[in-house]
Length: 269
Length: 289
Image (cartoon, rainbow over all chains, first blue to last red; front, top):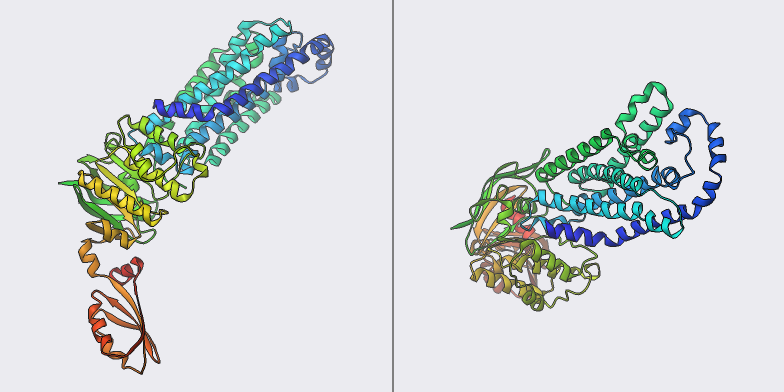
């Protein structure tokens, strides 16, 4: 299992470095933009008051626009949409390549012909994904600390710790769903389609639930309801419900994926 | 002692019967050839032996262990070569060998094999020719000196010189007690290295025979041209059929010993003759249809 874990990390080190550098680069852009945004925060706040409440709710601006702090600005600009999209791309491609991609290319035979159980193959890939997500999260969230110091901008470290936890839990849940599909598929494309489809449906459900009062409960079916960067960065908290949902989904998908992978036929496409 | 024991093995993919109730055994130190046309079920059998796919019914045991239940411990003692060697494109040969070494965690002879096969392990596999990819597959299969070798068309894409190296490797392995199960399309190869063969057709085992008896089933296509007209019917006999008649010649299909036909031909004034060995496919069609 260690050999599989290490080979996955080794194979992904360049893409991880690129994704992490992108995360840090985006933070840097926002840090450079922040002073001018902060100066106009009041004006933006007034402007937002003219928008319908449902519209603001749909885009996670329930408590008014908080652009006077770096955390509020990043919650809105970076972590509400851009960061989850990067994480989804990083992890779904990793999961798809890890099992379905190996079956598709036929390289799964190199591993499966050796004395390694399929469960360990799955766990090795899964742990590698978790470590890759952790590294990306550290760089793309805590990268703000040296950048804020460099540009003499105030920041609240605790907010980023909670944001990192929120982001990691969201990421690992997405990765677990993708690993489940990867475990039962023989083509990477199917993993992209299935996981992407589910995430798009979740995003739409969250949007619809905010816009239409009668459909409010639909938000509980969406990861984007539980993933709340404003709550993490501005209010320094994460709901217990969100933690449980992400953990339960992750464990359920990972265990199911490992079991199904152990039982299936490996037919090279 | 039976090292490989396949009992009433069936594999269905949905409605399709890929392998339908086959049974056979392979003894210790034996090289067992597994023959059959494309789509006959050879690779499915091999993939079930390796636990890549699971049997619908029946059992496969190797070294006394169930290929499904004891799959992990069994693979410490089994070497496998795919019929279509797939590699990590961004890895070098050395990285592949090292990966296999780490997964097995025991001493190996990869260095010897690399030099025997004249393989350069420093090149990324995406830059390797088909033959060199096959060499790497052979190294990964043989490097841990397994007790059982399961090989799916092991010499595909290798030139004749390297084929000989692989045959030498097989002989050396069997002399050390290794049992070999190999599929092949190549009758010459099977004749050369195998002691027994199983012939599978449309998922069913149609024959399990020694190579000696398979040789007796040999078929030839004989084209003869004479200087003068000849009564072609004199050549028709048991195992000999005239496929095509021409004004001064004929094409015959000869099954089994060709000497009787040659003796008859010797009585005539032959202008030209060509004798070609029938393909394995033709032998299958002739004897097992």
